[in-house]
Length: 99
Image (cartoon, rainbow, N blue to C red; front, side, top):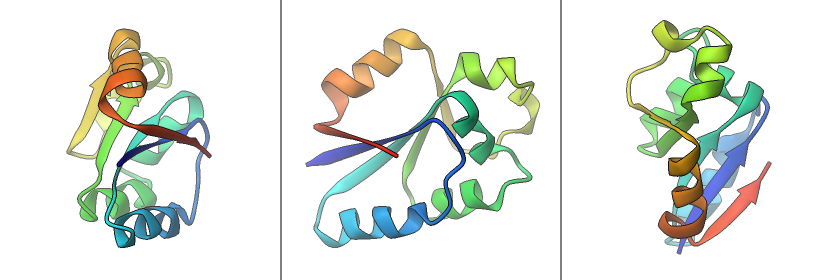
């Protein structure tokens, strides 16, 4: 089972949720929208920690641009537009967890 964790604001202690999913033998990805995109700013340690765990991180391109973060992203973040977000939710992941 593949879980997509949907974040619309900064979230600390996300590592525990991801670890629990991995321990159960499942995989997870993260979708960052709205103010959640600040987690992949180079100045945010949380995003670096998540990437170091090998989890796939998707971020709304529109929300990144609106907040002026385009040149400040950590490496490894996939920017997605609205249609790609729909594909993630409807086709690429089995379940969505909104935090």
